[in-house]
Image (cartoon, rainbow, N blue to C red; front, side, top):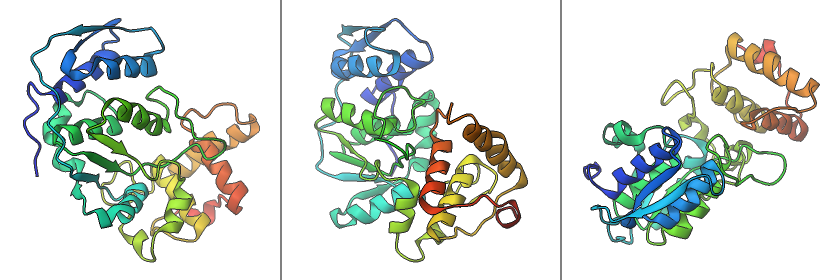
Length: 281
């Protein structure tokens, strides 16, 4: 399946408006009425702060998203959240889609929009009543953070709530958004780990040399489900020695992505050890 052309569609308008908010940092956002000014008022407050951006409603030519078809889309990947979500909803017979099949059409107009936003817009553009995607909770200690700001790794949950409040016909569902990686990996059936990949650099595999591989390696070590790779010297030193040890010694002073907090959680919950001799290949 390939998407309908994006030119002059509500989807194109959504990507343009997102770019105006985030890259161009406009103080006034001109929103065509069919593009949902109420949503953009909420979204601007979420990203930029309440009252920072003024919304002006215009009578643009673009219509609204297509009428809902009643169909479900599952945006699939080889990540833990996506793999678990597909197992949860397989009885609903969703259309299984991959963003990679749409990237050539979307990337030229995406302008840095985060993936949950992109997939929600694409699902609505294609007429799906529900779009499902996997998401992983990174804030392992304390309640999930649904606050705004695109640097917030737990932001997809809050985004989905706001999107659904303004797009009742094209809803976004994230069944795993409150589950950390260890719980997701432990819940998968035997053998599923052989088909997983969440690497930042190597699609369909594990490079062992990126931050996500580091987190997933120690997740697998914690729950006893090896993923079939070891870590590089570079990433072990970068994260464990240069980031994690100073984070502990500094009394958990700074961790905007929650990635270091997650390592604390693994140590406290499972007694995970960071062992250069055993963990570096």
